[in-house]
Length: 81
Image (cartoon, rainbow, N blue to C red):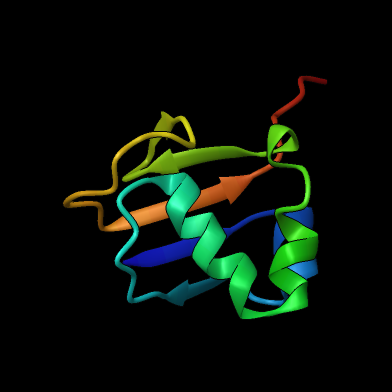
């Protein structure tokens, strides 16, 4: 699946997107797999409450299932202005 990173998440990981092979059943499982890869992922996902996630461009939760997902995006909460 394609995993996309936005704003400071992208800055900490150093990539705007990547193709990930994963056995994860939920978004949280996917994050656990990514964090286990390298410290830069651990830094980006250190505070999951400061992140939002979208599956196939639909806002989701970290406990959402990934079955059939083609794209997962991580980004900070949006603010108006």
